[in-house]
Image (cartoon, rainbow, N blue to C red; front, side):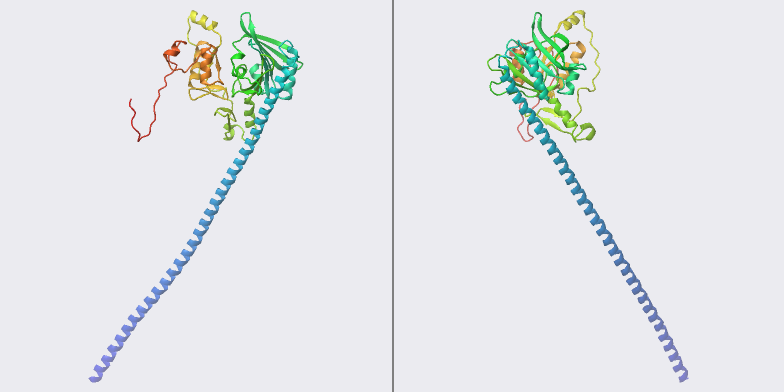
Length: 428
């Protein structure tokens, strides 16, 4: 009995040891499997991290390199553009300075020659033509040379080869090289006589029209220098309708004034033919300004031909038609820099008031000739001396009403006063 109990007890102990042994092996196996999985996860995490850092470094390095390349490329492009503009600016500056110095020298020389016996007065016109043509052949940038005396006699020779636009504006024919203009007092008023000359200075055809041009009323005549030539600001040449500049000097021992005209519009083709090209095609824009801020040349295409609103002539009564037909060309003021109302770009009249006056001309048949190149004070003085027929964009005043007739308002222009937000409110 005791042996059976002992054997049973030992059997149960073995079973228990075997059971705990299985449990231990199970836990041991589980811990080993967990350890292996953890190590595997750790290996995968490290590889992924290293690869991610490597990719990030490559992307960052590439981004920085591209950024530096763009920055350096942009800087190089900017420096190249600035260098090109600087070179072009120096070239144009040298061209303008050379033209200016040359024009001053020619003015002085011709004034001195004009005081000699051979050229004194206007009796020997052939000698003057020979002198003027020879001068402009050796100085092709000069558009015209002229001679004016105290009785408003005007003698001008135009160089048709000075600018391509000159031929178009003067309607010159093939074989014609020069244009001779003479303005003088005829039996029925002022007369302009135009003679087209060939290369041998022989007259090809003659045109005669009435004129309202008085050289003595122009700034180049009134302000002509005694020792040093007077140089005008850029303005619109009255006969040619192109922008230019005049040099004038009094001829010693006479009552005559010598004038030299240079077409400034000839600078614009120099800009368009450069690396800048035409602004509308290349996107590059260049402007040349005068000292008072007026644009005298640019690489933009000419604005002479633009989109115009078609205007139908208004119906006039027989009396009004007769009145308009009898009216001469009216001289109208044109300020230089009162944009956007009344101003000039390269001597060409612009602005709201100019557009309105052009519309009036198109609908009524009245003819206007814009006078610019003068200050507002000078325009007013010329109007008071009856040298200008129409002075527009003028505020009404009792003093002005005594010397002029006011029309109906040309336009209404409200004015305002701008103050700071924290300032005191102005009484209204």
